[in-house]
Image (cartoon, rainbow, N blue to C red; front, side):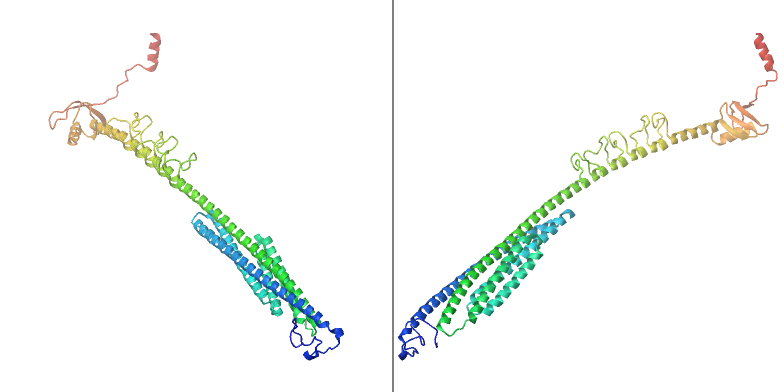
Length: 457
C-alpha cells in the first residue's frame, strides 16, 4: 500500500478496476470490507494505547508531585536538624559530661542531611522516570537507556541503604521499589522493541501490528501505573526516613539540653562547695572549702567548728567556742591569769608587779628579774675582798652604797670573814667590824661522856 490503511481510503484492497484494483472477481468483493473492519479495530486500539500512555504520563506527573512533597518534608527535616544543631552548640558551653550527647546530636544531624540527599535523589529519579514515560511513544532506545538509568538509581539507593544502619528496613523497601521500576521500564522497552520490529506489508500484518501496538500500549500503561505507584512508595519511604532522622535529631538535642542542665547543676554545686559561706554548701552534707578556710555561717565559733583562719590567728575569741587559736596560745592575753592559762609569750616575758601568768607562777622574765634583784641585795650586804675594815668601807661607799650593821666582807690580811657591828661615822671612820669565828668546842664534854651522863640522869 502507498498510504496507511484507514477506513474508506484504500489504494490496493478494492475490486474496482477504475480505482486501480487488481481483483475483478466478485467472490472476493468482501475482502476489502473485512480488512477495513480490522484496520478500524487496530486504529481504535492504537487510540486507546495513546490514551493509556497519556494516563501513564499523568500518573508520572503525580509521582513527581509526590516526590516534590517528599522534598518539602525533607527540607522540614533539614530545618529541624538545623534547630538541633543550634541546641547542640548551646550545650557545648556546659561541662565535659555533655560532650557525648552533643556528638550524638551532630551524628543525627548528619544522618538527617543524608536522608534529605536521598529524598532529593528520589525526586531526580521520579523526574527521570516521567521524562522516560513521555518519550516512550517515539524512542524504544531512549526507554532502554532510561531503564538502565533507573537500574543505576536502584543500585545507588541500595548503596545508600547499606550505609544507613539505623534505617536498613526502610532502605531495603526503597531498593525493592527501584527494582520494580527497573522491571517495568524493561517491559516498556521490550514492548517498544516489539513495535519497532513489526513491519509487515499486508493489511493483515498491519492489523497484527495495530493489535500488538494496542497490547504494548496496554502493557505500557500498566507498567507506567506500576512505576508511578513505586515512585510514590519510594518517596513515602524516604520521607519516613527523613522524619525518623529529624525525630532522632530532636531527641538527641533534647538529651544534649538535659545534659547541659545537669552540667550547670554540677557546676553550681561545685561552686557552692568551693565558695559558699552563708551556710552549708549542700544542706546536711557540710560546708564549703572557703567557709572552712576563712569562716562563715555555721563555722565561726561553732562547737566542733572554727575556720582554719580562726584556728590560726583569732586572739579575741575561742575558735570553736571552747579552744583558742594557735596565735592565742603563742602571743595572746585572753588566758592570762587563768588556771593553766597564759600564752607562750606571757610565760616568757610577762611582768606586772606580783601578777602571775596562770595565777600561780610568774613568767621566766619575772623570775629572772627577781633573781637579779636578789643578787643586788646580796651585793648590798657582802662587799667582797678587802685588806682592812677602812678599805672595805671606802670601797662600798664609792659604789654609792650605804654601810649597814650586819654587812660582811672578807679580810685578806688575816683570811677571816668580818661583819659590821657599829656603823662608821665620818669620811675616814671604819666603824666596828668583828671576825666571824667558830665556837670553841674543845672544853665541851665528849660524846661518850655526854651519853653516859644522859643515861645516868
